[in-house]
Image (cartoon, rainbow, N blue to C red; front, side, top):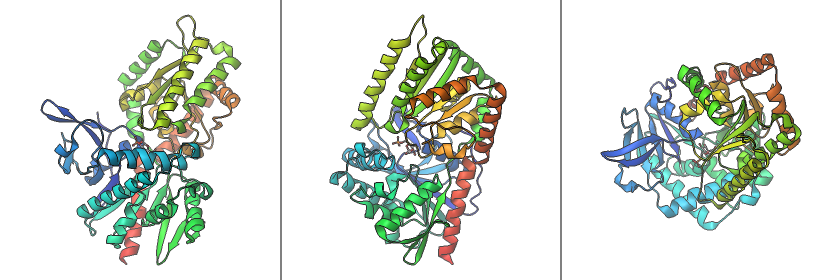
Length: 485
Ligand code: F6P
């Protein structure tokens, strides 16, 4: 089953989005190709939108072993039931290494998540990033129809695209959503090419971030580094004769979809089998891309502390950590994996007994429907990133709990923490508080658990994916009308 489409009325307009990731991974098959929806927060959020609106999606033609030049540069997708068009941007291996693995994921990603120690600022990475952004800008300019299209760029891979587009055609209205945190100006200024990045982003008419804090950090950086005035209250930046609007709107999930699968009898039965197979009475669940920002190592140490502090839980509770392989060519990700492997082995060696093990560890991604069964099986979801723009797992977990049960222990550095004020969020480095929070979650009364879960579900349903899209597109249309009049 594919995700249920969201229902959005764009009136007479076509939506054009541009992201680094492509919507469907293509692999060769006996007769032609096979298409599989790409796993990832951004892509899973955007596929239902594009299916509903039938727009154009400009993206990298993707990785893998397939010779992508065999593929057409534009194609109607999904292959079995075409709804929208993909425009592929073909990149060489060297471009991918320097732009995606390089500048995007070894400069912008670590810096925006405050990991200066993992950041590398290499000229060849930056040159590739600029050239690849120029390729995306060119592809968009070739496809876009100014009178009919709404152009919505996605994420930190595309920082320069709007500036490049505006240089060629200043009348195009564009918006970008920055899916990761935007750091404080004192931190952002470590980037040697900070001026170009900020100028490029200011080519957009609207810049969306998950949180007001990220908007303020951006406004402050623009003011400190470029000297443009900005209005902290109204979140507007004044760039010569233009106004750039900053929009704080945290991304949501398709509540109906998760709730629907979560209440399915098959899912419930699958959830029962999961717990049985894992041989534990109470299940704690962690789900993340394997990324240093997700705090997986600290979480394992917190579990160790928990078992030391509350030994009665030995034999009773296990953590299942699902770590989805990610950016495996980047040395820091390889090192992180080794550390996690080490701690899983060490902690399991220390505590396992009589067929019970404290940590089950999957190093692979699961199809979304299967993941929902794990959400349903969990007594506690333990989500404790060191820094996370939003964290959709927390919202998916709540949406999937159609039984209104299950507790969430959330790290305070996740953007989602600011959306659940009733939840006591933990500091992922404070292992004692994490251990205490875990025990409190396991010992919560039924009444308190239902109340907390219900409050979360209400919030997730209210600010769902459809709300997020509508808010962003509404602002884009407003900006378009301003520039037309
Ligand atoms: O969280 C930021 C983000 O870029 C998401 O938007 C995306 O789904 C995820 O990271 C995965 O990243 P990548 O495309 O590098 O696998």
